[in-house]
Length: 66
Image (cartoon, rainbow, N blue to C red):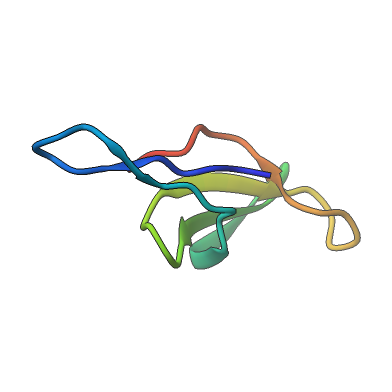
């Protein structure tokens, strides 16, 4: 479960926290499996996931980046 802390550029106050809804923007095959570049549909945060096999859930391989 991930959370997102969106802040206003002028006040730095936390505006909202939510569970991300990841959407694949692009993907490609590697020797380790399928790499997915994903983005949260709500807040726009991005991360990179690795899907080592179609029968297992993806594994986040990066931190979340705004």
